[in-house]
Image 1 (cartoon, helix red, strand yellow):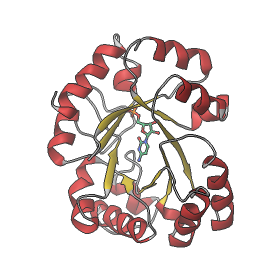
Image 2 (cartoon, rainbow, N blue to C red; image 1 turned 90 degrees about the horizontal axis):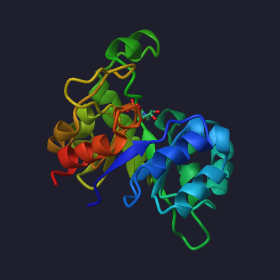
Image 3 (cartoon, protein in one colour; image 1 turned 60 degrees about the horizontal axis):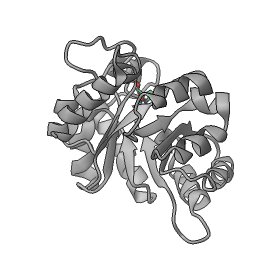
Image 4 (cartoon, rainbow, N blue to C red; image 1 turned 90 degrees about the vertical axis):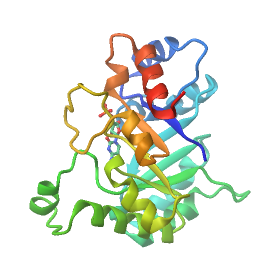
Length: 233
Ligand code: C5P
């Protein structure tokens, strides 16, 4: 099964993003375009980064009524993205509509995954803010099972929930895990975190790493370290 380190390109615009990618000269890391960059550059961000030879995870976390999500996914299906996502909290009708919208006329579609609970959400927030009175791992695996039943290929979750997700959805169901920090680094706003090495041991399929690479003194070295620790190469 594919396994990779995905760099979160959380930059405010084109010049910062392209200067960052230029650092990687011969390497073509798998990258994530999130709301910040997409809202700044629009679909051109995807076109330009694909043109440079990167795989793209478009992280827009759609969450709306089924018809709106279906239409939006249909527009995204025309971009040459490799992976995209939505919030499982939108429910099964929304997820089924998303799969329909994302499917191209030839029957193919980019990998579609669901956000379960953000890695910045703690058990306390789950209970106090969302009124969900269940353990995090149960909530995440329930959302994952619903996503799997709707035809999605995986979920975004914390590495700490990979076990729970795989045991409910099977080992082929993808787990894409942000909340990654090198040992000794600060967590910043993330809560449910682990190291690249631990994420590998736990069985994450992809790790998403933002600030530990983008804000490192030497981003290429930090990326290489994440690859070494996660891919064991
Ligand atoms: O900088 P850091 O490594 O914390 O970045 C993590 C990235 O993963 C951010 O782009 C964030 O939006 C994204 N993400 C997340 N938790 C989720 C889904 C996406 O942190 N559940």
